[in-house]
Image 1: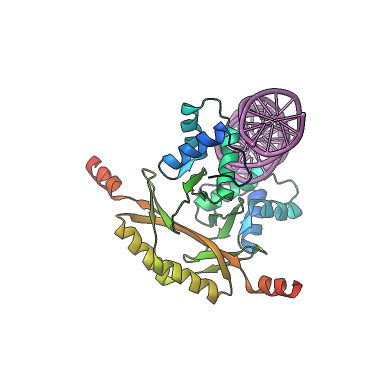
Image 2 (image 1 turned 90 degrees about the vertical axis):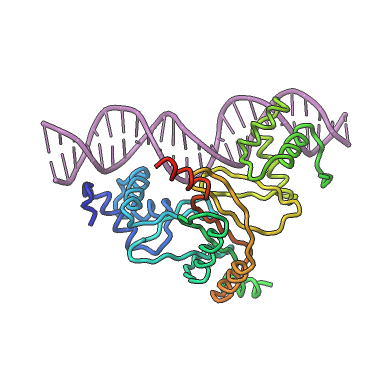
Length: 137
Length: 137
DNA sequence: GTCAGTGCAAACCTTTTGCACAGGT
DNA sequence: ACCTGTGCAAAAGGTTTGCACTGAC
């Protein structure tokens, strides 16, 4: 799986296993804590280093949302998508929309750019959080 | 102009004046250096504090692009717009597109979110940079 | 004369790195 | 045995804060 010139160490195994097994959009800190439960000897630096490796091997994708914590998501088979985040509970939902992608290309072209990538994040309040707020009022 | 319960100090004057006079999307560091040329006694912390004030008063908007430096842009009369950045030269171009905005609302609604704000940044290579590259080849 | 604003340096927070040691190959 | 990978702690890089002092009101 990761025979790209890298060594298989117990730390890397545990980090990768935890990462792939867990729900998406883990921060380094989330990951560090989860790995620690399994293998208490793992250091913070190794989590950073391993995730960078996984990113380089395109097994993980790095996300920088507005909370200032780098998060990683499984890049497995997934196609491109964007994210919408709840301002209240922090929930992250993925979505893909053909029309938006096409529009972005058009805009770039109109401005003379050849697009390499983009970042699109929507922020708002999700339905459950709105309901909860109303009940409190 | 900034009589919102704040004091008018020479530092704030100089920072605000520099900010409003200069081209857009200044980083704290850009601003700090430009202000220093006028008023060498100004400290880094004051630039941060003043920009935060201008942001709170909605005279400036904070942008966090991919380069890791917080940038501010004049929020004066401007309407909402997004940005496209050149991977090569770092140029930042603004654009506004009704259709994209509408689509974002639609997507949010479809997913049960009430949108508060969003971030959309396109990255690519601008025409001049592409030409330059071709000439080099 | 007060008290908000300032400069400095230290603190913070996330991420990276140097180094001696450990463990895959 | 070699040499990559690891843990720790220190460094880095951007931003914030505590504190005594300055200056606007």
